[in-house]
Length: 344
Image 1 (cartoon, rainbow, N blue to C red):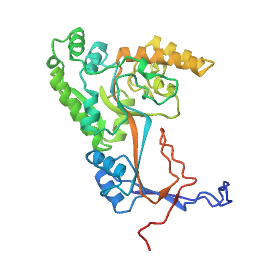
Image 2: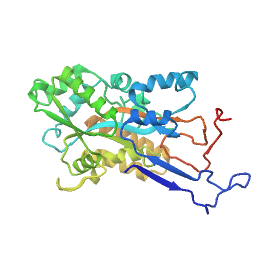
Image 3: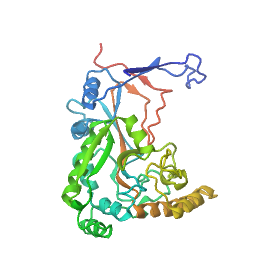
Image 4: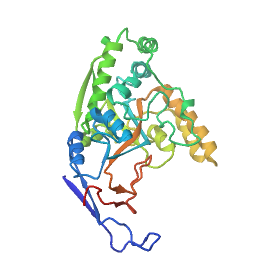
């Protein structure tokens, strides 16, 4: 639980252009640190060569100093890449409370996503999510901006609250938002959502922080009505995000495991369009079907899409050949170190 060491394969078949055997590194040591501030401290001491994601409180300072090559962080390299990743809050769509589509829509309209990205995350994300579940600008030819999602609109929030059968949010039983404790930003975002729903809808939300393993069990078995999730692409296609809402992955019995459709959202129209995209002969045709399917899903508000992510990585100045990418696919084949200039 503290470290993983990956050793070099001395018989690896690839060589570089000069005939040197690859990889250059003798191995990779992966350390597990629960607190991002402790991780940043270890990085500054030189105990880490790379760290993925920064402590939220330090984002602005790190951005400014790495750009200007000044201050404590000026010697490091900050890599930023839009990721194929979306962060959302999910409803259990076949549950007693959130089986009500209008209630889901009301809550979706009551959240200020831009404020969450800018004030809570200090901009550590690519964009606030006002379109669909598919990340913005992630897939060439797939125009997410054609999808009508949700943004802060209190008139619409109150309209759908009444349409759901409630005069005001205070009439709704207390809601519990379940999330894993993996990083401070999860809790910070949850606290902001709780605050906004109280102010905008007079809706009371409790926050329940559990282990990642417990969250996985609760969401797959349908025990959690409202939960946080980050969806990262398994492969570079919008289809991988729509798969999350595919109704035919939902078991007929509520006591059976549902994966990847943790929301247990089912809409035959969505499924038909999704399947048509899978059968399409060209990418252009597939994308046209997927866009229609995604719009159907967003109209039903099965989840609250909060923001599209961006990969922040901090590297020591000595690291070379470790490029960033939208899937956080890490190829260490040709990574190497250059000598520290401070060393005689």
